[in-house]
Image 1: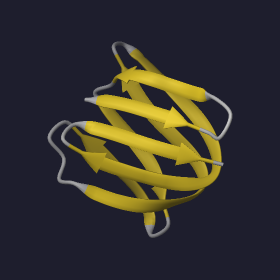
Image 2: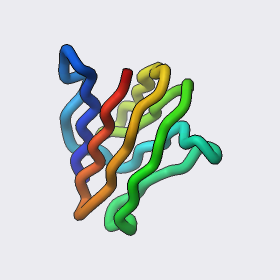
Image 3: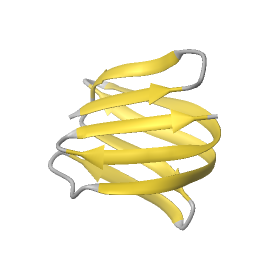
Length: 77
């Protein structure tokens, strides 16, 4: 699936990932390939994603996540 993490000024990450864990308002949640569509607000925390053999983390203050058709779009602030 494709993950895009963007802020108002730059693209923080864009690429293929196997999984992404997000800090949702009601708790952390993980998105895998073929996940059901959803929209969620995000709170302060870490976005963790695995791409290839590497796991990366991006710290955010909040934002919105949209999951649809194996595309995870995350707008952060």
